[in-house]
Image (cartoon, rainbow, N blue to C red):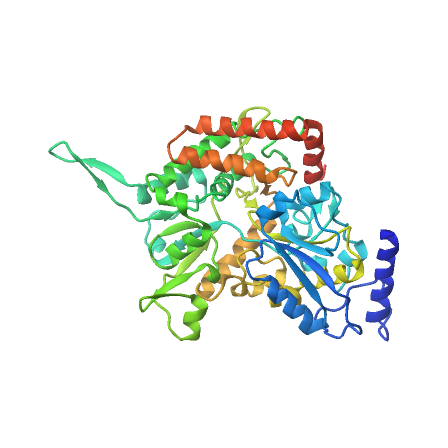
Length: 499
């Protein structure tokens, strides 16, 4: 049945969209810049996980451009997990956090995107940024979805302040840590009468709130466990043994404690809070990403969004925020040999954490209109469709080369043009890296991340040591693996890595 419907799609696309045109070598999707479809598509039903307001723009634009009817069903991430990731029978498409691809594919709920669609001229796969045409959309070496991008953690800083710092911010974590401590960690000084006083320093804002501490931690550890040609991650691929008690992870957690110092407020901050603090001068540096929709500004005694203030032609003075890629490492740790290795000449120092957030759009195996669902997915992932719908929403990010030519469509206008160019360059650099760290998208992924996040935050609060925190998290991971089955999880891990 599925084979028949895919064949039907190719015939339908060819007949409707290329009538009167030179014969194409392969069938393609409709040009997304052409609103003439010939016929109105049937009603489609889309399940959206964690909609923050972007879904309505998809519905409006689909209706305006193609006279298409779209029924939206919304569930929170928690609700979807409670339903055991089950997609109802009437759902044609599902838009979901990319980390759930392993859960959905293991339940056989996603169709593989047909090659004729993926390779079509209308979709223009080759214009996608590398991560979004390969690693992020693939599972078991098959393409199961269209990427709608996602944010990337990076340094945010007060440009004027950083320009005055000597020496400049180092590019590796081992040198950056003492540099940060000198400027941000409060120091106690013993005075003549034997008492002590604490000298405050400029504020470093780290997003260490629940669900975020684990990502900052993994961003720090990533360049010390990844190397060109190496597949090491957080599990042993042969046994599913957790690797998070190894040396690089302990060092990274100790470093994170030193970076935070006594600034316990960081445990309440998400990336949105960090950007707002740097932008409004309440912090000199932080980790996050720029997006205007995060920001609430004080003006004339009231709080308003940046868009509201711009409409009123009123805007308080804001900091010129600069952006830098997070530090790398000149060394990487080989876990099997328990040895540190110097990177080879010409090898990049940067191996960033990717997939912190981000969404995929997939067609379900339960769809009664696979043809129309595939067309909507390709349109939404196209240059035209994405810029008219998801651009600028915090959950998404640039995923096409053309997106990098207009980065402020994604950041908003509160950042300078120079800052926008820096944002685009960071995204470009990360997509050009030899390898990155992507937390395995396997069944139970949310449980593994939550267990590690809980222990990291306990360590940062001073409740347990780094060694205890990582040991506790590893024990919890082992229990999750045992519950799901070791052999099953080994197979799922290999499917996720494409091996």
